Amino acid sequence: MKAIMRRRFIPNYYQRDLNKKLQTLTQGNKNVEDYHKEMEIAMIRANVEEDRKATMERFLAEIANVVKLQHYVELTNMVHMAIKGGKAA
Image (cartoon, rainbow, N blue to C red; front, side):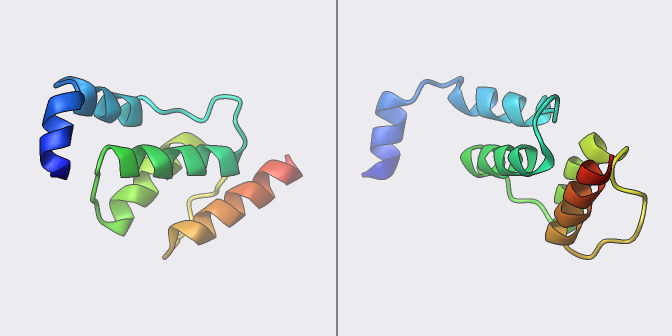
């Protein structure tokens, strides 16, 4: 039923627009927490399933000036370091 409703009411270009929004997402004037939350929401909406390292690279691409290039095992650690670095700057 859900698939039928999607085909009926969601335009064909919707998924393409979601993917484009995710690919062009930038931090801009948002703080790190807001940027991280927006990235997670965009990934869920676009139904993107990628490994942890790819997600960390996607996130790090925008905040590399705040987070020093260190080895991070989890995205949450990277977010916390970026928040700490942003407050120190």
